[in-house]
Structure formats: C-alpha cells, structure tokens
Amino acid sequence: MHFKREIPVASGVYRPLNTKRYIVTTMGGFWPVVQKLPDGRLGVVTRDGDFHIGERGRLTWLTSPDGGESWSHASVISDEGPDNRNPAFGVAPDGTLVATFIKADRYGSGQYDRSFDILTPLYMCRSKDGGETWTKPEVVDWLGPGQSAVGSPFGRMITLANGDLLMGIQATGDPTKAYVIRSRDNGRTWIEPTLIADKLNEFSICDLGDDRLLVVARVDDGQALWQTESDDGGYRWSEPHAIPGIGPQEHPPDVIKLSDGRLLMTYGRRVPPYGVQGIVSVDDGKTWDIANKLFLVGDGGNRDCGYPSSVQRDDGTIVTVYYAWDIVDDPRMGVHAAAIHYRPEDL
Image (cartoon, rainbow, N blue to C red; front, side, top):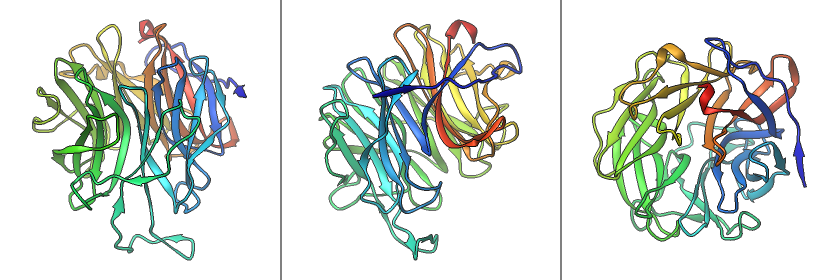
C-alpha cells in the first residue's frame, strides 16, 4: 500500500520557483538517502524509531511507484540496535541494493554518553529483491581484516562507468578523515580505502564523467562547505577549498549532475528560515551561481533539518528528499521526511 499526501510549500525568495511537496514519512525520516531503482521506483533509506539521538533508532526502507508522490509504509532494514543510524545507500551494477550504517553503541541507562570510548564498526545490509528482504547486518572490514571502525558512512553511493561502486566514509579521529572506498563485486566486499582529506565530513560524491569526480563536504572547523576534485576515478584528490558565499550553518551537501550537464547542489539551511537551499554550476563545479540561490524549503521548525538527497527522474523532474522537525504553519507535523518536486528549466 502507498499513501499520497501533498502539503503546501513556498519556494523562491530570490526568484519564483514552482515546486510541489509530498510527505515521505512521519514520526521519523532522519537523514534520508534516495536512489532510482532498476524497476523505475524511487527508494529511500532513512531512520526512525527514536529521537535524533536514541538507542531505539532503526534503519528503514520506503518506496515510491510514481516518482516520489506516493510512498509506502516504512519497512525495517535493521532494528537490532542500539541506535542504527547514519545511512549510506547505493544500487550496485547488478541491481543489488546496498545500505550501510553504524550502531551508536554509546548509551548508559538509556542516555547517550559521549565519554564512551567505543569504536563503531561499519555495518551493511543488502537486498537482491528490490528491498522486499534484506540480509542481516554484517560488519564491513574496509581497512583490512578486523579493521572496520568509522565515524559514519554518508549519503548516496555512486556507480562509475567501469562498474566500481563508491561509498563515502568519515573516519573517527582528530581530525576527522574523509575516505572513499569501492566495491567491484556488487557491494559484497569493500576495498582500496583512499584518503580524500582531513577535516572533512558528511560529504557528497558526484560523477562528472571521464573518471572525474567532485566531492563537496562539511568541514570540521566552521561547518561551511568545501570541495575537492579527482581526475583519476577517486584515487588522488586536489587540495580542498571553500565554496564562496556559503554560510557556516549551511550544510551538509548533496550534488548531482543533471541531464542538461549542469550540477545541482542542495544543502541544509540551519539558520532561520530553516530548510533546504540549492545552487547550480554550469562548469562542473569550477564556479557556483551564488547570486541566484534556490530556496527550496524555508518553513522548518528548528535547525535540526536538511540533509537533502536528490535524484532526477527520466522525465526531467528533480526530486529532493529532506527531513525537518515541524513546519512553521503546522507545528503538529513533528519530525518527518518530505520530497520536493521541481523542474530543471525553472532553476
């Protein structure tokens, strides 16, 4: 069964922007990651079951048969806990769905305790039937035998032209270290951890074509957005540099390449008005049109919001999924994930 609920949204500010917004899930929806599935549906991996921090958190799965308007009930990928959270999600070349996450085993008497000195393994579940069933969580030894500790995976995995499936990892440490790891067997094993840079976290990987990759990331210091590039499929990376015009509370990012060749970057806006913004690049990220920011969502109830994830449908429509606590005009909404729909010609 699927449910369709459209809710009003006013997008624009800098210039009018025609959008529609549909509820993906309520009473949850943290950190959603969306992908187009081989059968034409959209799929989202997200988290519900508890507050932003809570040991009952579970990883869940939702699908849309009509391009992101109607959405299914949430089904459980993993609820073994404690606190299954921070998903990354990909579609392997053979159609296998791959979801990775961590279990934040840092609770005492039900309370999150940052003093717990516990390394967090990277867990993975896979589905070969379009998300109907998922394998039990297994630890991914991405740094070699017995070496699996991470800060978190993040965001949308991408598949390169050669079939490599790439995933972003932020590794525990001071400073945080951003890695890209890859799978050549449809997500069964993960190899070749490559350091992107220090001090980067919560980053998006975009395939520019011809072995060129772009990473845009939140930064440990200042929490603005920086970017770095690779011209060899992700083995070597340029020196990271800041994106001008992005504020210290505008993060984290998601970047996709549209069918017309432009890049679309969406990111959370964690200062009033709370929500999701976007910017466009016509030169593969060398410059960004900061003067014409897109205001996609501006009615979030507080700064715990954003984490957008976008796909472009075959008909050209862009679907950006995000989460927020409440809506200004409807504070009873609570935590939820929603999907914004808009057209590239309106950008």
